[in-house]
Length: 282
Image (cartoon, rainbow, N blue to C red; front, side, top):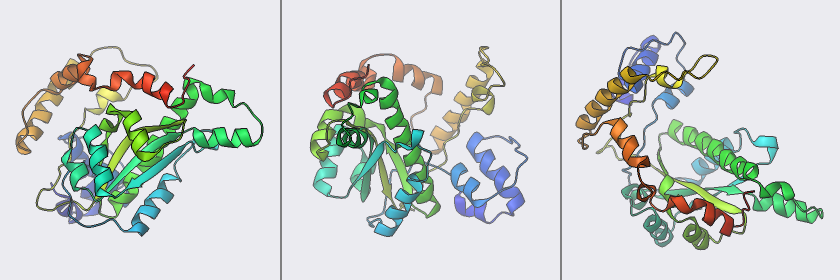
């Protein structure tokens, strides 16, 4: 079902349609529809864009939304770089192994875990900032960046733009750091392509695992939910056929993605790279 089709439904039916599309079943959620929930449930990764620039006002609003996300201890340990220059985008795309969404998107956002700013603040006050040298602080910056980016995504999608996260920026974070002239203590966490979706190649909502696979009551349920996984393999293969993608079980995709060091595409060296970029990770 397209977003336009959903929009024509009465509000009482829209939530059921959105949830049904996300899970590919008649999963009932007894709650009321609203525009925020519709934006969240309608999320899809957009890889084909129109050659139309993203207005500065929309970007600035997205950053305001990003800065409205929670931040651990209000350290606000993240930054973001907006990349529009085609030559620079091409260099970053080489790190990501040349993805069409980076080529097409008029805007590429690089989200950063930024411990450089708090370290400078500490130095200005003659503090050693020893607390920044631990894994906890690195995670804090990564989590802050992720929370901020997701708020930005919701803002952008609510205004009709499309996005796609680019984890492949981590294939070579040191190369990214050189290209973007990152100071010590700043780590590129992921990229995000932004642009107006090309209506000629509409993106579809990818179904997710059943809630019974991810929602646990009180304590983690260690029982293997093999029926859930078999069902999801079938659901995802149906989606793949619709999208003219190669058919492959999700469980096989998981196995392939984690089965070898080579499958990490250079990201097995992230610890080494992070230390070279100024993170001690004690």
